[in-house]
Image 1: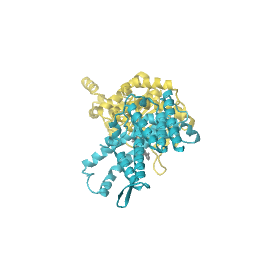
Image 2 (image 1 turned 90 degrees about the vertical axis):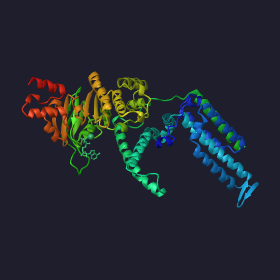
Image 3 (image 1 turned 120 degrees about the horizontal axis):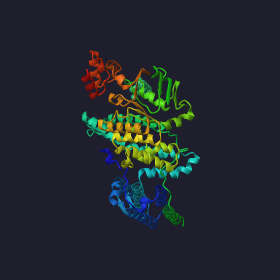
Length: 267
Length: 272
Ligand SMILES: Nc1ncnc2c1ncn2[C@@H]1O[C@H](COP(=O)(O)OP(=O)(O)O)[C@@H](O)[C@H]1O
Ligand SMILES: [Mg+2]
C-alpha cells in the first residue's frame, strides 16, 4: 500500500550519541555540513567531509541498509550529475573523444566531485531524519525560528503546521488506500492504459480525498478553537528539549570544519 | 449552570433559521440527552454552548459568562469541553499525551502542572499504556477516550458530546459510555449528550427533544419513551421494549406505559 512506499516517519530508533543530540543542534549542523560541502573545492576538503559524514553514520548506529533504502532515486541523480558534468564541463586535458563529445580530466574531476557532494548531502540529510523523530524536528525548527519571530516570522505557526501535517499524513494515506479499494471494488482499473488514461483514472480518487481533507481541516480548526487555541502567544510548550553542552561541542566542531573549508578556498 | 435564552442562529440569511428561539437551562451535575431528527439543530446548539458559534439574537450564559463577550470566550471554553462526532478529526497532536496536553498548553499552564494533570487524566481514562501512541494507531473508541481525557485535564465542569459514538462499533461504544458514566458518578461532571441512539438516552436524567430549532419536549427518558407514536413522528427510533409497552398500553394495559427495560416490563406484566 501507499503508506509503506512513501518513506515517511522513517525514524530509526536507536540509542546513540547522534540520537541524543538536540534536534535544533542537528538541524544547524546539517545546514553547516551542506554549506561546507559546497564551499570545499579540492579533494582534501571533499575527502575530509565525506569521512566526517561516514563517521557520523557509524556513530549513529543506523545501519547502511536503512540509509540506502531512501537513497535509490538519489543515486540515479548522482549518476546523471556525474555524466552531465563529465561531458559538459569545459576543460583542456582531453582524455577521450566520443564523436562530438570530449571527455576531459577536468570534467571527470568535477563530475565525480559533484556526484560525491550530492550523495553526501543526501546521506547527511537522511541521517537527520533517521535519528530525529518528526515531532522533535518540528520542535527543533520552532526553537531555531523563535528569534526570527520578532521580525515577523510566524515560528510557532510554521511548527504547528508541520506537526499537524505529520499527524494527518498517515490518516490521509489510510483514507487514500480505502478509496482505492472502494473504486477497485467497483471495477475501476487503475493500472491499465497509457499515461493520460491513468491520470484520468486518478481523478475519481483525488476528488473524494480532497473533499475529505477540507472537511477534516474544518473539523480540526473547530476542535482547536474548542481547546482554547489562539496561536503561540501566551502558550506553554510542555516538552522543551534543553540544549546540552554536547550540542555546543558538536556545533563548535562543525563550525570549525566550515571555517577550515572557507579558509582553504580563500587561501 | 448553562442558560440558553431565546437563542436564534442561522447559517445564511436566505435560509430559515436553524435555531429559532430556543430556551434551555442546564443545571450542574445533570446528564442531559439531546435528541431530534437529522437537521433539527442539535449540533448547532451544541456549538453555541461553548461559543464556537455565536447567537444571532438571544444569549448563552455559562455560569453567568456570556459567550457573546469576547473576553469570556476562553474561560467559557475552559469550562465547557467538547467532544466531536468524528474521532479522526479532533486529535491535534502526534501522540496521546501531547494531545491531552494541547488544551493545557493553550491556557499557558506551567509545565510541571501540565505533567501532573496529563498524568491524572491518563490514569482516569485508563490510557496510561497508550501515552506515546500516535492517534492513527488508536481505535475509534480510544480516540474518543483521548478526547474526553483532554477535557478532564482542562478540569472542565461541562462536557458537551456531539454524537460521540455514532462512528464507533458497539464494543467501543460501551467503552466510551462506561468512562462517561464513571466520570459523571465519581466527579460529578455535567454531561450534555447529543445522540440519536435511544439506548444511550436511557443514561440521562433528562432528555430534550429538538424540533425545528426549538425545544419540543423536555422530560425524563421514561416519559419520552412512553409515547412511541410521538417518537416515530419525530423521526426517532423507538426502543423495542418501549414500543411493545406502548402498544400494550394503547390496547388497555395502561400500567405498562413507559416501561424501559425487559425486567421492568416483565415485573409490571406480572402484577396485572
Ligand atoms: N456549516 C453549515 N452551513 C450551512 N448549513 C448548515 C451547516 N451545518 C448545518 N447546517 C444546516 O443546519 C441545519 C441543522 O444542522 P445540525 O445542527 O447539524 O443538525 P443535527 O445535528 O440535529 O443533525 C441543517 O438543516 C443543516 O443542513
Ligand atoms: Mg449533528
